[in-house]
Length: 418
Image (cartoon, rainbow, N blue to C red; front, side):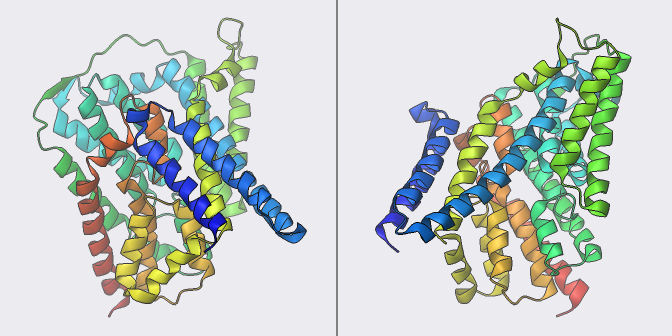
């Protein structure tokens, strides 16, 4: 490995340290990752030895930016919908109708975990996280308890999507690679749910209070309800369109967003006092810039073939141990390029091992807040949630992940024998 590669790896480590010690340095994680991410690609261009190398760097950068743009546009659409629902207090109104006026903190924690788990099976992880957090924040919980609820929501969201090809990108990649079958993947929901219930029990220690929901009168117009229905319909049609016609989710969500804008206009719900397009400005652009920096760094690591070094793990460990390690590594490295590298290497695994890898890379990112899109979105939306605060729960998250992984191993033996 040459000097340039070591320098680029050092930049990636520096970015990770910047995120970890954000509370100490008081430098926004978005600023750190954006700087290191863009600088790493500039270095790749400056150190290109010839025109062919420069062309290869240029090609991979364009691929990387295309992937980022797809994610950005999807986030813009999803976050705009949620911003509207929050401003119009639609989610608060729904909670007033569904939840009792008084309940225990433990029961609320359980309901949060179950909602996040099952909703992420229908919606994508980002949308499920945004909606789950929008339900948690108005409850009036202390900062420490809000962090607990958020940790559970992130883990549950990642666990809920792992059994469906529409719920997690890595699950879809492994399925399209011909490594698993849909009917086998569906069984993953059982160990995934068990791990969520275990984590709920672990987090419930010390929670003995009662929560009284403050029910404020919420006036919801018919147009607001219609737009909420458009949001729900957009999620459903996104799933169906992707499965049946292979329509990219970003295209479906942008189409749904445009329908929202047009409905508001034609029903005279778009005026100078509350312009519908202004809700685009209400989203957290810090989150988008953080995503940009992180994905540029991951793309750079893929370009210098550092991710391929991870494949050596399979030469030194048994399959079940190597897959477990890959899940843990996915909390440091984006699971999409990690899964892509594993598929490209064409590692020989039996169906049970591919099933365990699907669980590992789908849920393992929950161990750190930067390890999944759900965690990154949560960190940007929940006041006081930092890398350090989330890391305090890493041991019990690792325990829940490990138990779920063990159950997947037993499930694989039952399904495939051996």
